[in-house]
Length: 182
Image 1 (cartoon, one colour):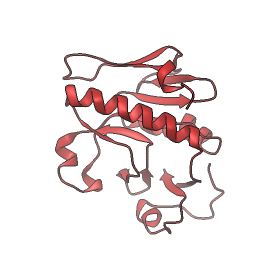
Image 2: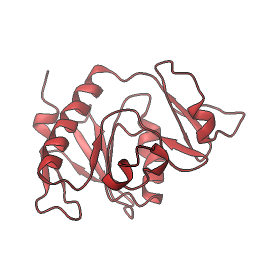
Image 3: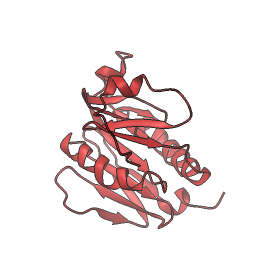
């Protein structure tokens, strides 16, 4: 959620904030603070990560991350997507500052992150020309699929399909499995 800020935050300022269990991000200088996610968020994110990892083991077009990361395209932006697939050659540098090419980003909505994920981050990912952005709405049991030029999302309720450049086959994820009860 956006915090009223009396200051303009840089990526370096956010990196210097305490490691207190919150996720700190800055987008165009605005600070976003998100508490630890709810269990449903983690279960759904883990299922998506497993499906994507299985796909990438067959179609190695990038490297999947399912952990906190410092993705930054400029000095006033630093985000930590829930999941993302990055260019492997950039990942091999072992420096977050060099990881700039994302092929897919995924945010699983939480009550505290919905505004940032749906509006601020979506616009950022579109500005950065990320080919595909999934907003996963656990309560609606649906995924909003955004592309760089889209004015509105395609809302998927049955399955999501990812056809990355360079892959021989698409990644197909059945949402009934993603949203199944624990």
